[in-house]
Image 1 (cartoon, rainbow, N blue to C red):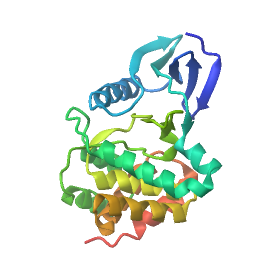
Image 2: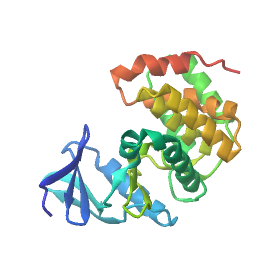
Image 3: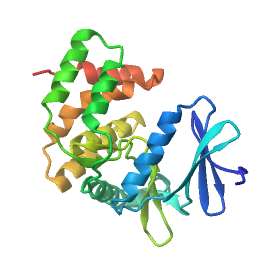
Image 4: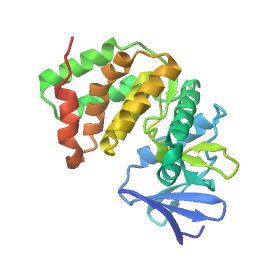
Length: 249
């Protein structure tokens, strides 16, 4: 494998292209368990029949773990939205349709979303009273088993030349409640500074899925708390706002 053509750089990983392969190389101190979990998520989601890059190999390159998948040629939905603002509504419709297709699938061996959220809330460093309220709210949410992407945003959708969408990055995938996944997508739009687009997304998701907006909003405090664990200082004040304004029942 040749690690010459860089196609993406993240905090703890670099993605390279070698022919028809994409090679995601993690930093040397990245958790082996997290690498293997991501690969396992990808393999399990593949079995649902969704359009995702096929997992080819998990390997080590020097002292670094790497996940090798198919390389999908195309542009991200985020790029297309920026380059064609007049078609934004059309792309947003497609975006929500793809998310609803993901949420229509089942993958019973994926980790459970509620288990992950409970763990994240415990790791937030928030005071005991706030953690208790968040755990209580999470515990009261209905048990579902839909495939949840966990980081569903336009940069994780690749559109091929023939218009076929492929969904990338299954490292956060779980099985659980569709509204939790929608709440995270809403939050991601907010965090990127697109408040109007966040509201437009949420309205469209609720309309297409026949979901009460208030129900998705109930998840926002929980999702904001889980995002807090990433430790991004620039996001903290904003996330605390979402956690603090909750009117607990």
